[in-house]
Length: 222
Image 1: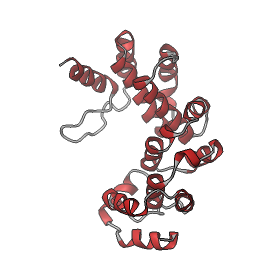
Image 2: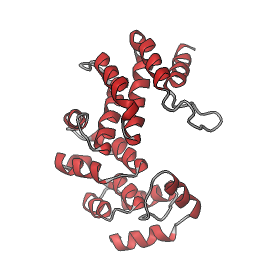
Image 3: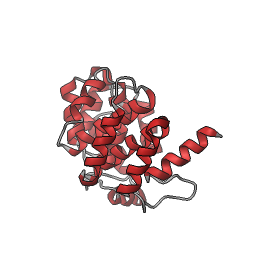
Image 4: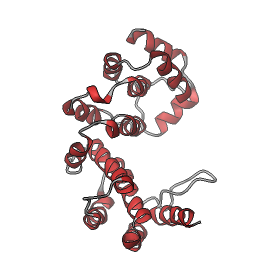
């Protein structure tokens, strides 16, 4: 299938409710509103196709970028290409998919993480903090957790909303994974109050760090 054919197929699968949901959470007008199951089904038929993925990404279309993420090969991306992709995407749902499916699989993700942690670009900083949260939870050796807590305490209140989310995830992971830092993480979350009143569906855990930390620790201790 060509890019034109794929865009036509995606448009035919447009769903007004999905489109409205995407718009509510920051997607621009370049979207069709396609269910994720339909996007995954198309990706399954296309299989991995890195060149096609790059062409789909360049359209800027939300669904085309979701699809591109599923069929691209992270190993074929240069650091410069990854950096440009991260900075070009402003819809956080796409950005987080890119982080999960591409960034975490790239062999230079640690070097990029360190660079993005110092970036003024909100999407680059979001990616840096996302990768840092991942390291805290799975590979914390070499991280200065006290210094990370210092930064979170000082910077999160005034950070861009896109950055606050992954900074908060890092805060929660420190509190969940490290008993020696838990009380400080809880205190920072309580004092800053970020996401205290965040609406959550029944059965879901609040992103408010004190609640999130306490609930995850409770589950681990059961």
